[in-house]
Image (tube, rainbow, N blue to C red; front, top):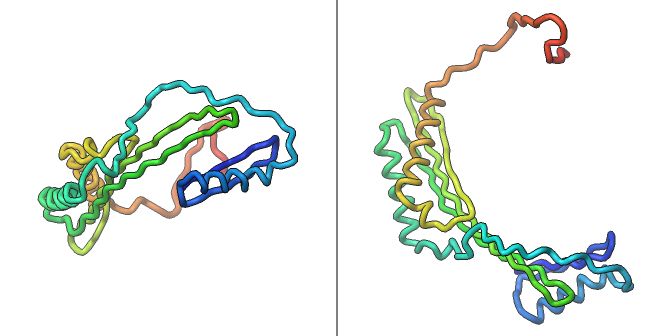
Length: 193
């Protein structure tokens, strides 16, 4: 789908459609213009086209086939369980999306930005002596899936999730209750209330 915005001074007209076609674009243009009708106003300056390419234009969803993604998730599960006998549950996810932004100017110019986004997450639950704790790790960015699905990348994330879970498993409650508080002379930088 797409969204369209027409701006005149303080007035903004919005329109959108789930269908991407010339007729849908024309209907949305007419709808957005209704809110800013009455003419007048001035054109804003066009956005500067810098041509700085910050990330790839490739669709990350097509970056790996479904069987490759499934095999990677299974490998993450097997790897996590092989690291420690206390692992009782592994939840892993691979996410990818792409967003295409295009600004169409009244004078005919256009500026485009294609934004890929990928993410790999892993969450691990460990159990020892009837106590369960969890840990998670993940990462992502405007990159393709090929780097995210490399074994070194997801193995590092899996190790970190397990480390956090094991630290939580060994954690003890923080002291609580009435405690002595010692404040330095002058302005100690706190507000008691």
